[in-house]
Image 1 (spheres, rainbow, N blue to C red):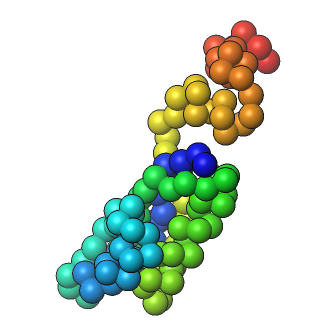
Image 2 (cartoon, rainbow, N blue to C red):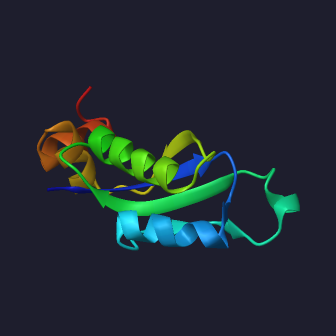
Length: 110
């Protein structure tokens, strides 16, 4: 199953006491921003990971469920994909050959 790198932008950072539930659900594969004091809760938080799934959409949906379930009142606001992809990554994601993607990137193919 392929792995996908992405980050989730959260409605707020997580509190330290919420980390155990997230760790249990994700087996420690998610890195999140945390806070120790409530006055910092108005800032957005983030969660980043490399997550496996049959598709990028499936991987995102599974992780969103884990994050939102592990911390009541926490919501995912948006997803940011990893901006650094290799030609091979792009080819696998779009179902084309590496040469086909390379030609598209260089402008040799429209």
